[in-house]
Length: 373
Image (spheres, one colour):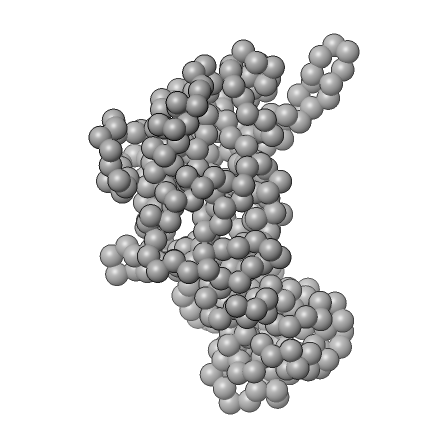
């Protein structure tokens, strides 16, 4: 696909990010009909189907590589390309306390234990914390309370059934090899209740924080313990921990309420008064649904028609990048129109450029139902 061609495939209800190939394979084992979508500023994603009963959800996957910066950047790209209802980071972590090999931790909070100030007297922590989305944490607690998720582990290799926990974890830029190392002591001092350590969770949640209304959750399988690390553990337990974390993640995805896991029509216009709706900023998913309708208008993805649309919105159009239409560009245009109070003007221009088309009517209906026109 070209950089400006979504091909109708760049739509996903949930995005699952991983750092390592072993984690990525464990996630993909739960998906059907995986296919690549166009790159978003170089980041390559695959989208597949996950079916739970009669409900089918579209799940996008991406491998970030190790580290907090890459995880944060991947969130930004996933938000621009998919506008998902939920974003998960799934993979392995080192256990610090209260967990055993193979256990799964859904992180209700992630600490950046490396932030601080080095002085003559020693290191003074200035710990930063990001929290996972409240609704996803609550759902993770429900999944943890039952054993249904364990039946999703594939393939089952006869290992003892893992337990699941909803607890804080810590994240930093180094591999913590022992609890008596400098980083290990820092963890004990600044993040005493963290049960595990990873290298991406804080950057991932920081990226979600910067993209307002994006629900995110970190899910980790324990592949080693700080007091007992080694290559043998990686070979034996990384695949096990990855499969366990993926099983928990897809049990959670399968339990997402319809409104949080699959696109559906917006509520009826009379459900909330227009004045009340105008008090709330549109969520990334609401913008994503409108972006889909805009790009579905015949001819709108052609460079000439996209330029014509921007030219007819002089105040708004000058604030948007002049590139061929893509989902990222459509989201940028809609955000700008919302900021300028110009969504009604957008509908009027589109109605002239492409009158009497179902997609134009759908875009107008969506905007009207949200009280923006």
